[in-house]
Length: 482
Image (cartoon, rainbow, N blue to C red; front, top):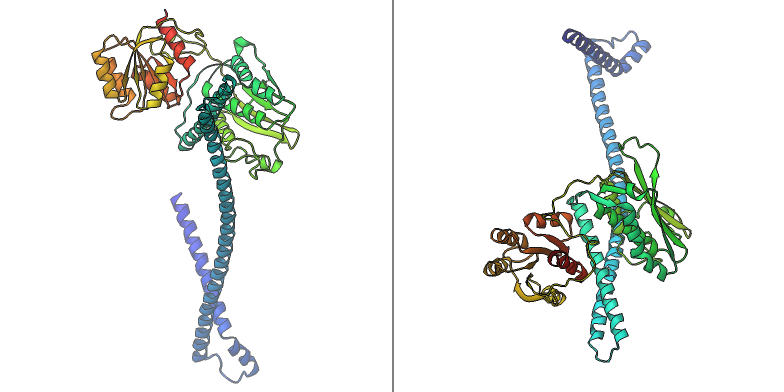
């Protein structure tokens, strides 16, 4: 192989040498063109003497060099012009993109301002209204309902912003667990049925698997987020008609998937999405109508979050829509059955379906650990009927000290984020000398890994803020009424 390569290289070098010699000969002939012509006209004059040949050849070679230099600079100039044209084109595209980005940013900031101010205005306005002494019972109920609705809207907005920030930073992870699919979809139906009925919209759910075959092994929290985002969107953009959601089995074979797939859908008879906007609706902070002609409540994060979650679950999402007729959002995820395994009761978290009655216990020694005075007052009010005595701590260190001095403590409501010592570390220290006290983590952290960290630190249960009274009392009944 080496000898053949050497032979080929020598051959190429020889050919190149012949080419160069040929070019030099052409240059010499061109440089002596006048002498050749004159030799034919005046053969008696010796034009091809030594002096004429040297001068003519020198002029020819010099002319060739000048010509090559000129050609080189012409080539460079053409290349530079092309680069300038490309640069101008790129700058123009960047300008258009920047203008579009600026327009979207302005639309997002204006929308975000509206989305924050609207629920805050509702909370503040109706809170001030409740201070008036002449309100009757019905007016008080309406005011409280509006405050609760506004607070939930604000919480949803914050959750969306947190979700999208975690997705963009790559911190979001999959946490697979049992998902009772048919029950989950019926729960979503009941959750949004009243909202749909208020608008005069029919809401239906359709399933394709029997209950015993509809239990999946997937990230139930992400599935719930995807489905509720799509159903809420459908209700938001539908004024009449009906909304149907559910799933069907995809019988076609997926080349790149080892699993059977389930196709979920949310079909509405709403305003539809213009064809030119359909590609953009899954982008961050974008609604289908950013010109505010038919804009609705929301900052345009729901579909972006849903798309990211579907892809994390190994699926895809798409939309089919006709303007003024309606839309159908589809997403596809693998059909992976859940097969139960034996689970230890220790370190378990409370299930919402466990109990519904209020506890009968009323003599508990309860410590509320929280650095927020509002949370402290709320929790002590909620538990007034079940607690005999309250203890309060605004740092983890104080909580450990109080618990060490009061071995008869029954229940600790442990906030996670606190100054000096956080709830995780405080729980670990308490568990070194008290294994029996029930510790419930109650925190504004709302991610599944935070729940795992709390249980690993020694907490028995985990609740996210704002803590619902019914959730907390169900835990108390489950633990202390037995």
